[in-house]
Amino acid sequence: MNEHVYEKLQYNTLKEIVKEYCVSKLGKSLIENLNPSGNKGIVCNRLLETTEARALLDYSGSVPIQGIVGIDDLVDKVEKDIILDGEQLTHFALFLRGCRKMKQYMRDKEGYAPTLQGYSMSLIEYRNIEEEIDQCIRNNRVCDEASKELKKIRRHISITEGKIEERLDKFLKNSQNKLYIQDFFVTKRQGRLTVPIKAAYKNVVPGVIVESTAKTVFMEPSTVGKYTEELLTLQADEAVEEYKILTYLTGLIYEHMEGLKLNVEVMGQFDMVFAKGKYSKAIEGRSPKVNDYGYINIVEGRHPLLTGKVVPLNFKMGKDFRSLIITGPNAGGKTIVLKTVGLLTLAMQSGFHIPVGEGTSLSVFDKVSADIGDDQSLENSLSTFSSHVKNLAGIIRETNKSTLLLFDEIGSGTEPGEGAALAIAILEEVYQRGAITVATTHYNEIKNFSEQHPDFKNAAMQFNSETLEPLYKLVIDKVGESNALWISRKMGIEEGILKKAAKYMEDKHYNLDYVSSNKVRMGKQEVAKVKAKEVLWSKGDKVYLTNKEDYAIVYSEKDKYNNLTVFYKNELIEVNEKQVTLSIRAEELYPAGYDLDSLFTSYKDRKLEHDIERGSKKTLKKIRKYGIEELRK
Image (cartoon, rainbow, N blue to C red; front, side, top):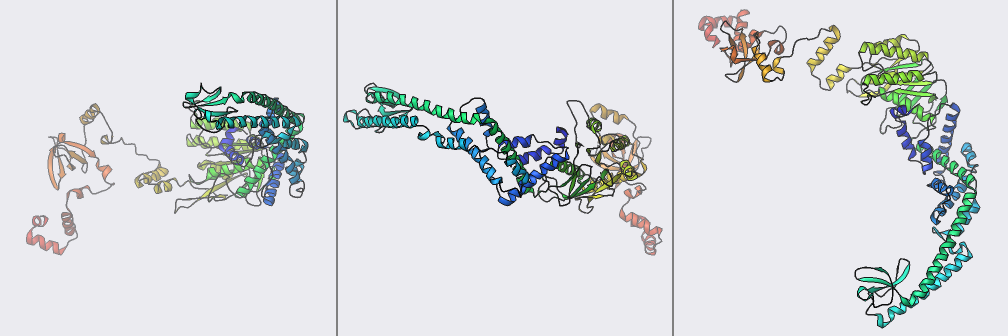
């Protein structure tokens, strides 16, 4: 299996969804690197892990996976001899506590999850390291109780800071300094206690300027200089002592690194397995029965990525037949069937529960190969057909008796006769190699081949011919119709075009006439050439009269003077051929056998002639009394 198949079947998209249920980068990394296994034993063990995780989640609602976030980064730091700070050590203690709680949680869960309970026994408790960190680090900082020396240094720091504050308070209360002081309070700047002095008096007040603005300088008066130096020395001693404690705690972790790395690995595995369990619970998934001999029985299956109201798939093959040819209309769900079968198989072989009904059985395959969609390559100058054939060539080379093949519109993209023949030859070859094959097609030749072969079956996607809606239901042992003309009619293709298509399906007698010149955009030179050609006028042709800027209908062909008789505004008039441009030929306007003479007589005249032909007594009396010309008026 390769990335091409994963992409076509959206396997990586499914993994991204499952990754969201992970707590840590460790679990996400394990999901990211997870691939379907072709080993039945491994697949069954993966599914068992997920089943047990689901059972525990159903039983208790949550699992104590704590402190695992970012723990791998801390392990890397320790291995690189980097001393952890207080916050990082606190995080490590949380991880150790999480390992201990997980082991405690799993201790009595052998009845629910014996496999996962066995994994938890690999977790090593490091209560001594956990307690050492808790004793020395509080609120992400080394606490006073971490060592006697640190406690002594911090007590002296507190005393010295008190002396500095006392002298600064006297400085603020001294009336002689009132003129110089900007604000009457003590503030810490850059770790030193200072008094805000007006900038104008910065050279008057003795002391050290620690920080300044346009109007204010923050000064450390000279009266506290001695104590400040003492404080700086104590703070340096504090930093050294803190570093010693952090080094000691990091050293404890380093000494037990092998066991701790095992804990990280086990907790990462738990994170991945419980992410699968959470996903199973979210989709109400289940573990299918597993076999390794090609039997597939999907009961009420759904594509894992489809949401909303989904028509379930019932699909069975691998016992009575090994190759299935699916037919039916476009947009009827044939490709979804391929993707559903493929993705459910990959998900199962990865240990994911799948959205199927009870009784579902899936086979483990060494390879799942798919030729779905358009792989046209501009970079490699491959046409759609060429890219399909290149993909098929690679698939055929790798096909064996443990291969699931999914072909969408096999043989399409080229001349139908050759495409169907090639498709049948490929289907025969992969069948003889022992593969389980599901293919979709519109070619009748492939359908006929499948009907004749004892180990092939046809299947059809059902389609509602009244509403144009696909039913997305697969019916095995039935041949489907493509319904191309029916769908085209529903989608608005003109009826005349559809009638021609239906006719061409029967007799193949195509219309080979040139397009009318008035339907072609031409330059001036081309127009002149067309006008120079001899035009044969026919009764019923629609023409344009350039002198009247209007349309008329040809009544008779041109005479020796190149004059035409045309019917214009209920009158027959003569116009010279040069003043006439052909608009539409009569055969394009009227159906075969149409009475063209009726175009040039009024309804009244046509009725009179009809009455005379049938011998109407009333009409004959009027003719004798008024005359026929009078009746025509």
